[in-house]
Amino acid sequence: MAAETPFSHQTRAAALSSMAAEPVDLLVIGGGITGAGIARDTALRGFRVALVDKGDFGGATSSHSSRLIHGGLRYLEQRDFRLVFEASRERRVLLRIAPHLVRPLPFLFPVYRGARVPAWKLRAGMWLYDVLAAFRNVKSHRWLNPKQVRRAEPALKDRGLTGAALYWDAQTDDARLVLATMRSAARAGALVANYAEATSLLKPDGRVRGAVVRDVLSGETRTVRALVVVNAGGPWVDALRRMDDSAARPLLRLTKGAHVAVPRRRIGHERAITLFSAIDGRVMFVLDAVRVTADDVTYLLRSANAAFPNAHLAANDVVSVWVGLRPLLRQDQAASPSQVSREHRVVESAQGLITIAGGKLTTYRVMARDVADRVAARLHELDGRPIAPRPPTDRLPLPGGEAAELEVVLEAARRAVPDATARHLVASYGSETPAILNLVDRDRGLGEVMAPGRPEIWAEVAHAVEREMALRVQDVLIRRLHLFYEYTEQGTAVAAPVAQRMKKLLGWDEVREAEELVDYFRLVERDRTFRTELRT
Ligand SMILES: Cc1cc2nc3c(=O)[nH]c(=O)nc-3n(C[C@H](O)[C@H](O)[C@H](O)COP(=O)(O)OP(=O)(O)OC[C@H]3O[C@@H](n4cnc5c(N)ncnc54)[C@H](O)[C@@H]3O)c2cc1C
Image (cartoon, rainbow, N blue to C red; front, side, top):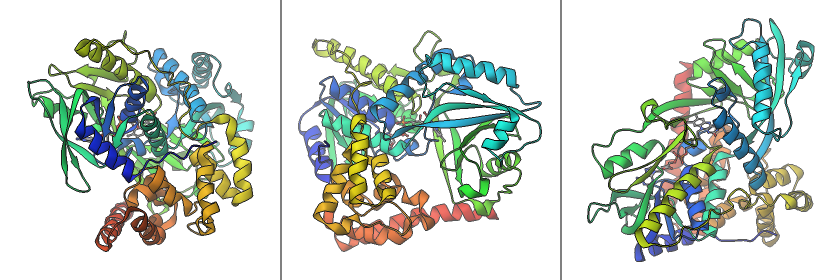
């Protein structure tokens, strides 16, 4: 059953001391999904690895995605079959190694007369999508006639409907996927620290040999010496490259992606829907968790209204909005077709800084493997050590991902807590759920729900602090639990009691407790102002 490995502020303090005390083989800058994957792969190869992130793990792009683990249906239009093949394989891998966090999701893709992609083409594309998944997607697609579509999705626009494809992809909890990957890295020996910023690179002899790392919470500065440094800075990749070489050419083109959450009943859809926007034909999703994806809110609401004629969505239906910056490769920097994927690229500067640019959540494991191969080759060149074999990152479950235990764990959880909480716990912690239930056993009060109508229980706050390295109120309410986005008023009702509990667990004084609340309410205010601006 679940091992209760600590992963707390103490783990972080020890990691920071250790990485400063003795040089590491590899320093990874950036703790989003890309950096986490690299730390896991390289630590499993037996390297001495350190990773730092200037904010919380996954706090940037990796917690602002559409949360899809997908084969990339739209790449079929660009005839990028290699990418679809690779992403489909990764979808299968992630469903296997993190079945609690990556779950199959059926999509309905309706087709209308005069659509940019006619029915015959979509049917052919769907067939190809199954072929490229080697017929090992969750299920093969099915074609529905208009009558079946109407029955399946009564709220969907009816006029001109010629049919729909029912196909499968997967959905994840992006922030928790980063965390699980990071914990897996730490279990394999990686020294990891959030809220630790690389402020400059060490170049004693012109080569990049480490970084100055500032503890963002205490202000303390340390020097971390490393044989190899990897830049996994996501949208900050180019800024980090300029620390190495002020004339470095940009690798990235940042594009904005927006999500809007509205109450599910306002749209009335039954399942996730893939659509061409009626405005400009771009692909968008109406997801299970009632989120849509594209570039701006008005566009999203208008597109959704065109697809669901009775919805009449307006700005005051918006519950929350979040925007992310996609760290896409610039066209002139895209890899040649012979390379593994056109979506990501590994480059090495003349001074030895290895940068990984582009990619996506779905393919993070292969991106990490490409970087780890490069690191292994460099370490071999530097000190002649044998090239370590690739670890089985596609088979080792992430923490909580012991698939065989999930049913048993759910049954045990149902005996201890209400059904909705039991399901929520297993969906978040998988086979590690007993670690939470043990806390409840010791203190029944921790089994109480945090807010009426919500499944989260107080034990999760302690768990987040002691075993998920949550250091701030926002770490708990935004990324470990998702109350900021999912609970009314951005979870403000529970912020003070959460801060109080964290104060005890982390030894804060009154000033720190107050600062944490001020910072959290500032984030809430920013979100509210944005939504108010939308309405005016
Ligand atoms: C709107 C949107 C929707 C998306 N939807 C999907 C999807 O459905 N499926 C999918 O597969 N992909 C999706 N993606 C792509 C995916 O989210 C990204 O490719 C991925 O999250 C990038 O991860 P990353 O680790 O490279 O970057 P990030 O998550 O941004 O991590 C980079 C980290 O580097 C840290 N950092 C930067 N500078 C420093 C420094 N000096 N010192 C220390 N740390 C530093 C930052 O704090 C940050 O945490 C989407 C992207 C967006 C924007």
